[in-house]
Image (tube, rainbow, N blue to C red; front, side, top):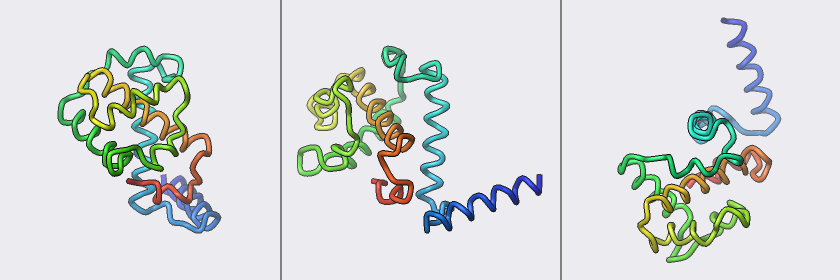
Length: 146
């Protein structure tokens, strides 16, 4: 076990030196946790493939606390002065993501719980894709935090 810890430490140190950052900061720990949580969520609800199993969204039910807190967080992050902001644009939503519906949810123009859950999940999914597929530089994760 001690050797494994040493190797992990050496890897972290190499990454830190290469990127000129410290991955031990709170922001990077949060990114790591987010990626692990998405993996667990996708495995449970979407048979490990959200892209192919999006239709399962209607089966997801969130507690009102999680539902409201998440929506409020996303509204603070992606809405400025009553309209979507640059962060929202950087999500790089695709044509089939139903951008208009997501905007309506964030702007508070609908209170349909299915639409809200779909918007929450689509935003999180796009953020996740941006992290995994190089849309965001790893060194800018902390700046991307809202």
